Image 1 (cartoon, rainbow, N blue to C red):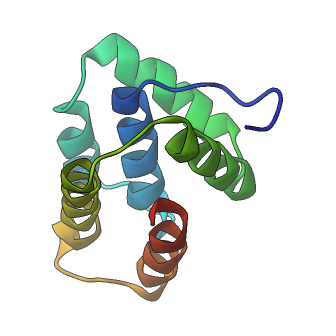
Image 2 (image 1 turned 180 degrees about the vertical axis):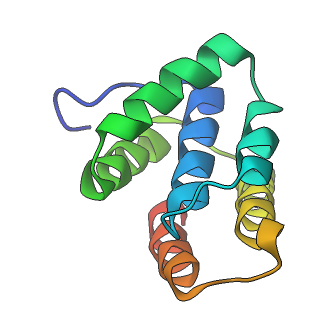
Length: 111
């Protein structure tokens, strides 16, 4: 794990990943944000969201990769995470090119 990279809990990492998915098309819809907020308490969401907004895309991907490697995810946990990612991607009934690109990147990081 790179020095200086924040260690997330699994829940915090999930929220961070979903925020990246919601922002992949450069538009965070209210529906996407509500879906993410429903998964965690408001204080945790605000903390993770504030950090996410300060990070570049490269920093976000590095944090995700480092934290995925830190936690020992089961196949079921990874499948659940992928399902939640797709719920965010398809919340607007459109899988845009930027979302597809992030999906491929995340696939390489997660597996």
